[in-house]
Amino acid sequence: VRENLDHVCYVFNKVTRPIARLELLLFRRSFLWEWYLRRIIREFQPDVVHVHDLPLAGSVYSICKDTAIKLVCDLHENFPAMLQTEKDSIFDRPIKFKKIITAAVTNIAAWKIYERSILHKYDAILTVIDEAKERLKAIGLPEQKIHVVANYSNPEQNLYDQKAPEIKLLYSG
Image (tube, rainbow, N blue to C red; front, side, top):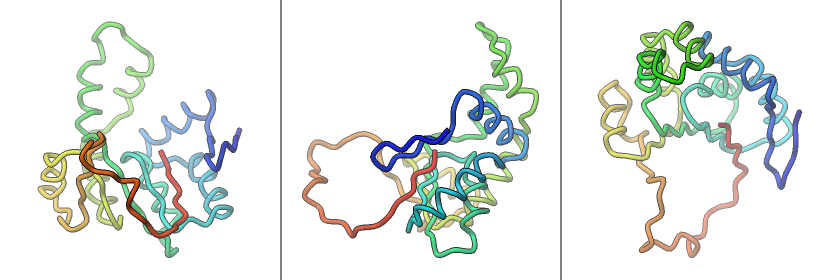
């Protein structure tokens, strides 16, 4: 089901989201998500694709690698560490089926390798704190690709007075 709302596309529903999540955990890419995304990119023709979080980075890269589209990966957390925490807390109350499935199919070492390899292919990586930038540098990502953008507002900075070039941006996440 795809619903357009002022140029925002929602492509998942209660059935497709769990399927895509399982694909991501098992294969570190979602073929279902790629199917939807190919159609959207063909129709929308963005200049930039902004990928929100690590799991979708591989799917987006596989679609855009032979295009002029710039790729930005926005990392709000250390995804492999978050998966490890989820795996470690599998029997914490309340026990949820989703946590059991995640723990059963998640290979943390593979996610760490995937993170290092896929992020090298991106034009820019956004993090929300300096510690995340340092962690990414420590796994071999070039500092010039990593940008810290706080996810809170600074009342002393007026962003509305700044002029930016007009671009088409596809946000994926």
